[in-house]
Image 1 (cartoon, rainbow, N blue to C red):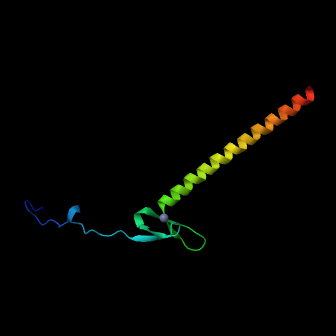
Image 2: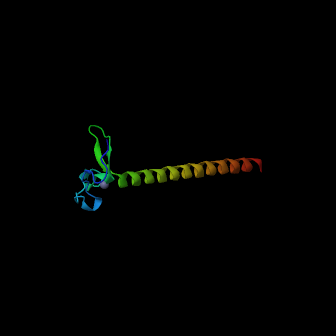
Image 3: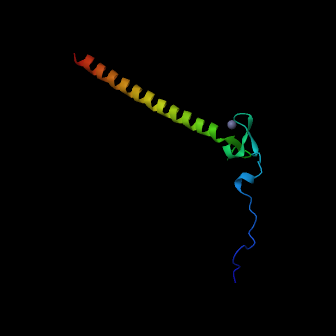
Length: 95
Ligand SMILES: [Zn+2]
């Protein structure tokens, strides 16, 4: 049996009436400051997991990628230089 009409509806407060709750702040060991928990990630460390902000994690990832790209570029240059040196040595020997 269903009640028709104005039955009892659970009083759910709309979003505008939501209490303005402050976000939980977490201490970021990377920045040595506090960030809202929503911007934080729990990262495993040697002993206990620690909170670190996503921003610093992303920045570290980016700089790591940059370093990798730089390393690849340098080794490519080195092998090119080595190849040209060998070519030069060969042509010297021939002439
Ligand atoms: Zn941080």
